[in-house]
Length: 257
Ligand code: CUA
Image (tube, rainbow, N blue to C red; front, side, top):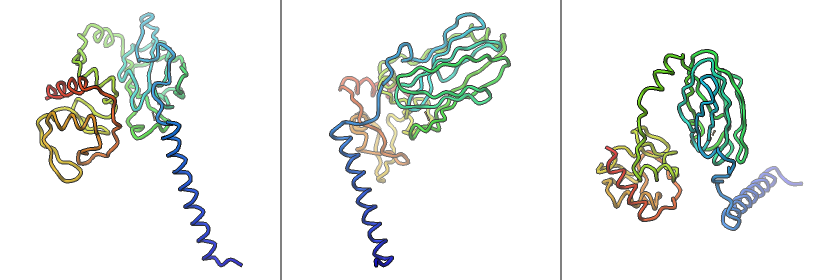
């Protein structure tokens, strides 16, 4: 008969062997079969980009794009009394799409465009949320939907639109998806904000201090793991960027006071 001690030992050995086998299979999948994070699975147009389309003053079509980890557009305003046809798709993994206060509740699945029609009768601020765990930034996935009275809506339509930064560097940060983790407005995200860092002296996780200059920024873009800012995790993947692109990004960061 096996004593309890022996039995336990066997269970531990089998569990460890099982865990190692799982790890080996995962490593095999990554290295040999190149199983990684999906990127851009959706080729259904026009859902590469979020937008609000006006069909009439009371009928709108709203395209949402979900991605790690935000919804686009992030802020939408429509007049009360409108019917809105909402279409949603994802540029990467599966997300959720729920609008508390309404019965809108959709899954956002790669390669699929989901649809719902909803009528907004009263002015109110709604917050769109992701309710499908989609990674480390899941809890930050939210977008505002402002349903406002007709007068507010009309006033907003006339207001000048504040232009997004148009520099090549900003465009690159957007295109390379850097802005999912780094903000340019001073708010800390999954990664440090990029605002006002140029020329600063910053503390690193290993206790050293670094002056944020061209060389440091270049290294941090090309080899993100080389130096980790204190308080943040080593999460950033190595982006595919050309030398010229790195230069453009650094030039833009220099202007971000
Ligand atoms: Cu997207 Cu959770």
